[in-house]
Length: 249
Image (spheres, one colour):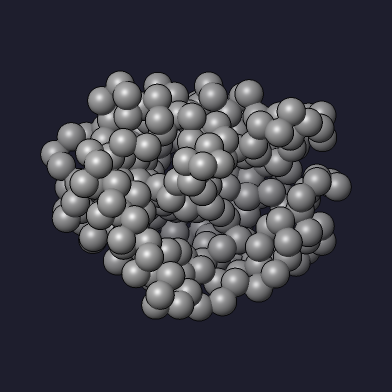
């Protein structure tokens, strides 16, 4: 993906100690930390992107990756960002992580696009997603590539691609309004921001392939298994459908 890949940052969000957060099946901090470390090593080995990891319970993961950090390949940050009212939900916490990253990360200052992924998941087909997206995106710099479900006002948040401008103009502020007690999730805010940005001239592309992920679901704790070919083809058909509609969400 020549145009985007040159300036793209892989952004992993992390929460080692959920502290009883709702809709979070795995609460064991030691297990969660090991899963984050395994995922970071996976992304370092499999992909060439620079990687940013931001953790929100003051667990410093940088000591495990001193060489990669010194080489400028990886940036690890942590802060106290998980002490808010639990009724707001984990989407609000992830919004705080993203906003913290935009305020403090050197890598974000230097990038133009971000691939946002859930920190404990390993996405095996990022290269395919990026390469096919490049074929269908036009030359406009302002963009979002994501799975959406308009009938639910919902956009999938575990992996999406967006220009930095999308965060700065829409998502960062929008995420501060996440509130589980009012049924306003991260995914709802993401969808709203995608629809508004498209109205304002951003290009939208439905993610061309289903995510081929490994790991445990944060919400249910279930193991993620290999994605079936039929599901992958369904995503590609959806991408073509939205492309023919001019990206209208």
